[in-house]
Image (tube, rainbow, N blue to C red):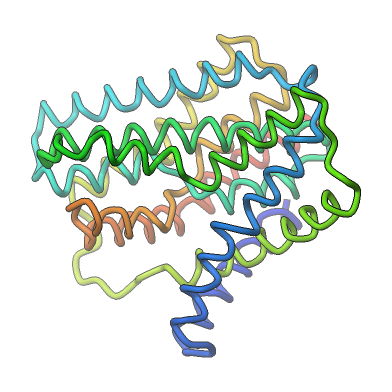
Length: 304
């Protein structure tokens, strides 16, 4: 257990310390984030998905379970907003905090926590489904609550250009058409993918913001509770109902227990959300997720 979670926490803390001590310039973090997003992580996804055994991965069940979970949680959050309304800009940040997840932590945890190679195949495929679905849902929520309907089509078009989505589609097409990448190219993608995990975790730490006077409020509690408690339980129940086997079910639960993504802060600023609330949610979820992930990892370890 300690060999799985503690190293990840330490790397995240190192990123936090390096950023606070200005060990490198802010331009470094901006550039590394861009490299991870556009080069390293897409390379990892292409290398994994193009070589996975599609017969072993429950593609239809997994995709359906993920989409259903996201739709149910979206409906639940909208209902909570109806019962006790909060400022629309704040609600969009609450929604992002509850629905988005940190891809880098998820993939790194799966890579270290599971002995079965099937786990990495499942998480690579799940990343594509979740990234596409979550980004479309977030655009719709921003459009509804912040009256941005005129640009809905343009925003969804931008979503479809997401490099992670393109990488997943590319990998699936190569796999389905039985097109093998040249060994030298596949090996290059795998090397680039290894960089994605470490650099991604350092960026998670660098993006944390802890200087706030008022940490807790009703919106923040709702977002944190949904992400770290409601979502993992719902993932387990729906995954079980869909008949997912042990490894796909565990990966599903782990992915839905991840803290929200650092880039939620950027999107909140671009689309009119509340960035201050978003920053608090990101930091609190990232810190508290250590406790919930410890419970989930203990469950996984007990079945291996």
